[in-house]
Image (cartoon, rainbow, N blue to C red):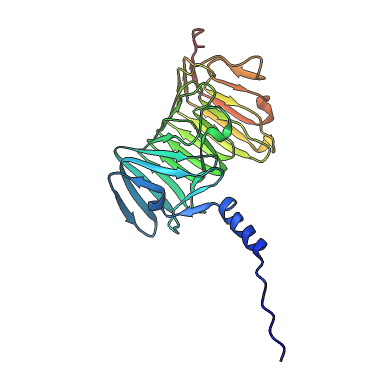
Length: 284
């Protein structure tokens, strides 16, 4: 009787699968694995949402080039709510979006959010990334953030700070974002600009304040490389106080203290209504 041949192990295929799982696929870790909690956590779970109340200092560890998916859940919302001045600090290495599972909205309330995962060189990979469905309420962003990865984001009553001359307080690069009753301070305010693989759909800035921005005017609009005619930027009812003049050499159009754009505003859908500018020549 002939002996059965022993199957050969395809080590090349196995190694390839392991490498893909390590470097190409987004991490999907449970929330308790992502946060280092110094003072404990209160957790409430329903069919509609998972609510986690944070106290004190909390940390989330990032890995370079990987998405950080918070929690595996079928609930509609994953809520992180701060209490008593709670803080959330991103550590490790960034350049990958923080988001909830597919179809789940990440809701963050009353937290101070700090980024220790990158440097301040001004490039997009040095920002703290967020993607997917997002809603931030009454949060303080101590460092610059980047909104991308097909984002559908809302920011309500938040404060954004640019602490480095080369970095904007917030940068919208892909998807849609709404800023309502927010404040932008520091060196630079809001940037709206997409790369060739991004697609900014709608950005609405409503009843926001841009104050004492010393490097740029309140809003800097770059270019839209996909189809500019389906991109909408709306700025309504905002106050621009003591922000810098627009760059007449590097940009095409602008209003001192208000905005500058690297493309003509009739190339995309641009709305500028009921805004107040308090511009002084002393802004630098």
